Length: 299
Ligand code: NAP
Image 1 (tube, rainbow, N blue to C red):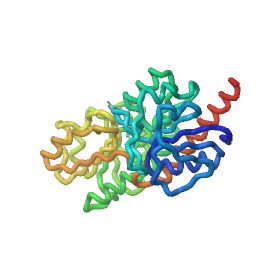
Image 2 (cartoon, helix red, strand yellow):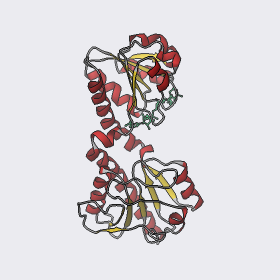
Image 3 (cartoon, rainbow, N blue to C red):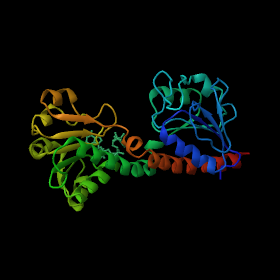
Image 4 (cartoon, rainbow, N blue to C red):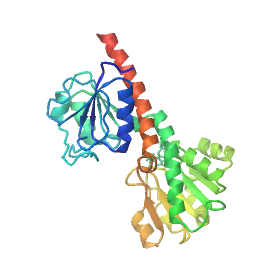
């Protein structure tokens, strides 16, 4: 339980509702900033306007999955007011506060390092990234269905990268009857691909295989689908780039070649916000309980 623990939530999207509900169920005291238009009422939650002293007495600050923008602005679909965090908010926060975010940009990292506050990027945790790969793969398959006039079954589908998203996606595509080519650079990943019944392709050999591609999914956060690859793709091929912005595709060249290419960020929050929120809530609750015990030990 999180009884007596004070948590400040700053903005967010539908996923944050699940997280707030979970913390409320665990009996935390909750402050909500940027939630004026939210209809739900949570037990023990108070809606407030943000001031420089807002975080003086809180044990944890929970930011949206997307974190903050480079100018400190925080997105919230529950308010029409502008929400901006400055270094001062963090400087005046409780010294033991932990700042939770999905992903952190340089602005947030600077705020936390300059003011000596602990920052946790939830999306970097394996437990979150692996669970999140499920709605990501489902969303990725939905995008292929919406953007092709052929079935995934019997299609030649390339998955670039065998990380947390790549494994789930490749396995799901294989189960749907696709012929799955797995592109990776590490010998152990290629061996794993073979073991999974996929066709392993070393990344250096990818261009010569791409002539067979109907659909290409990229999960590698580096420019891997460059002109030398795109020139090999058949005109009907569809690229769905799942890697974090700016993706791993030369989108300009793909467009010039008439190849449909889509950068598809944030799929869990789009296709399954409730599940995505639960995934974050579970990880956050575990980390907050650990933090609470540590603070209890210090007192
Ligand atoms: P991950 O577990 O770190 O996997 C990344 C994969 O990319 C690994 O197989 C890694 O192989 C490979 N890789 C990295 N740099 C490479 C390079 N220069 N050349 C060749 N291979 C390289 O990451 P993940 O959790 O699967 O996430 C993958 C991407 O999708 C990230 O950008 C993540 O932010 C994004 N993502 C997007 C969504 C969405 O909704 N679109 C959802 C979740 C995640 P090595 O081990 O050889 O480095």
